[in-house]
Structure formats: C-alpha cells, structure tokens
Length: 452
Image (cartoon, rainbow, N blue to C red):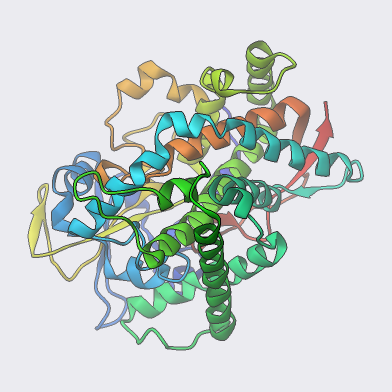
C-alpha cells in the first residue's frame, strides 16, 4: 500500500459553507459520513431541504437496484446538470421513455463492437505521445488537460467517424465554461430559484451550451445526409431500433444522447486517466509493475483487442484510481412518495445521494481507505465485497451505458502511455479539488514526463 498526505486533499468542515457548496460540496459532509451508514446535511435555510447522504451498500442496493422505479432522479441533479447533460437524453429519461431508449442504444455498446474500437484508442494515445515528445524536457505537463484532449479525440472519432469535423480547441473551451457553471446551478436549484437566476458567468455559460448543442446537431445532420453505412457509435444509433416496438430515435433524441456522450463520455474518462497517471507518478513501484505487464503481454507490438483483455493489473490501477478519486462524487435520487429505505424514514421532499467519495473511503468497508493499493481489486478481494461498495459507474439497471467503452478506452490509453513514458510528481505542488461536474483538481494536475 502506498500512502501520501495528498490522497486526502481536504478535511470535512465543522459547519456547512455556501462557498464549499459551489466549489467542493464534499467538504460540507461531516466526518461521520466516512464511518456511519448515513449522514444528513441539514437545510441551510428554511426553504432548503435537508440532504441525505448514503454510504450503506445494502441501502444503496435497495435504492439503485431492487426499488429503482420508486426512486427517480432528484430535482437538484436534473436542474444543475441540465446544461452539460441534455434533458432529453437517456441520462435523464424515466420510466418507459428510459427503457425504450436503453434497449435501442444497447447494441451500439456491445462488447464486440467496442473491441473493434481498440485500434482507435491506440491511435489517439499515440498522437498524445507524439505531442509530449516535442515538448521541452523537465517542463511540467498538465496531465488533466492532456487527457481531456486525448479522450475527446477518442470520443469524436469513435462516435462521429468520418463526420468528425469539430474544432477541438473551441469545443473544449466552450465545454469548460459550461462545466464551470455547475456549482452555481447546484446552489440555485438548492434554493429552488428560477433557472434564469443570473450567476457569475451566466451569459457565457448559456452561449457555450448553445454552441455545443448546435455543433452536435450539425454532426447528426451531416450523417443523415451521408447515409447510415458507418459503424461508429452515431451510425449504430442512427440505425438502432427498439427490439420490442421497432421505434427509432428522432433527431432530437439522437442529438440529446450524442451531446451527452460527447461531453460526459470524454470528461469522466479524462478525469479517471489523469488521476491514474498522478497516482502512478506518486507510486513508482506500481508504475513499474504496470509497465512490466504491458511489456510481457504486448511486447513491442501495438495493443490490440486480444492484448487489452489480458491487462489485469492495468485495470486494477484504474479501478483503484476511481475508488480514491471517483470522477462522479455522488449519485442523486428522490423518492416518489414518503417511504423507508432500509431502517430509515425518508421524505419525498428530501434528495438522497449516494456519497460515492465517502463510500469509496469508508472506514468500515475498506482496509487503509486513504492508501493507493491496486491489489485490493484482485478478483478474490472483489468477490468478498458487497457489490454496491464500489460504484464509479453507478449500479443496477441505470448503470452507465458507456461502462464497457470507458474501461477498454482507459485501459488501452493508460497501458500505451506508461509503456512509452515515466511519470513523476512535480515537487512542491499542492492539490486542491474543484468539484463541480467531476472531481477535477483546481488549476490542473502537473506531472513531469520522461521518455522511456
């Protein structure tokens, strides 16, 4: 196990803070959230509801798996994320609308279709490697920014194929404005203020959202005009039908889901890869072990579909990284009626969040919870844990549809980059989190990179 004080980048506050609610809402959770099955954040204002945070795997399973229809998306999540995640997408759909969209989209994410994308993952990783080789030696690199560019290239090529014509720099710049608004939108929804309530950066965020959605709409229109014979994800979605009803997605539904996948699909993978490389930079022994695994399995040839399936330790590094620094820090739900959840009474008025960050660092679930230890994801250890003790992609019927895509993508990219480079921490760098849409570090994540 590897310990570093930077692995615990903040301490819970004694009293909740509005500023923390915007920048890093996890600071407002009490220390008991890391020890007890449930924590309650009292309403900070008479009109503000209390918020329940769950860290009990059994109650989490009840909410997300066995009683999934009784717990809908919570209002705060819907309002705060409806800019970076389109309201008409699979992410927000409920009931019958969700079921038919999920059935229609599922074939695009079959394992055999995803394995065919591995060469594209390698090409995007190689392109990033070539960019690094041209940089001055001993110059720190913002690894989060680099991974954002690499995973966006992946999403663009695997989703749009030959129709890909997005301006990467402009798209990512506009996306940054949208994601920066999520903390403010969360506070506005918490106080139940109108959605048009202005906040710092309000008009820029609105214009950026319109730009991103407009670019996505153009991509769908281009493909409609060019035929449906391509086997990228958009092509598969365009030809997808609900196997039960034969219904196909409208352009509005296609655009909503493509928009969400372009944004959410690349952002979460970028964050997980960035933290993985940072953790490996801290733990050189694990980095060497990963490099040795790649050398044994792929030798000097490119990583292909057969090789990526064998990279067990590489996957364990990613899994442990997403335990310590889960891209999504919480999953929100709200009961449709007053009810009980396990032994607890819950009101339909109160949002309930699976506190993933706290769950993944819970003292009663994990040995040395703040240490980096990829071997805790060895198969025998995984089998011994409750299936809802680890939730980087959610759980139950609504588990992220892109889980398989993300794991293959991240495993391929991480293995490719670690084989070619050694990553080292920047001395004196102090880590601070800025959790709005994902668990990004404030000001980036600098690393030193040396060619092997």
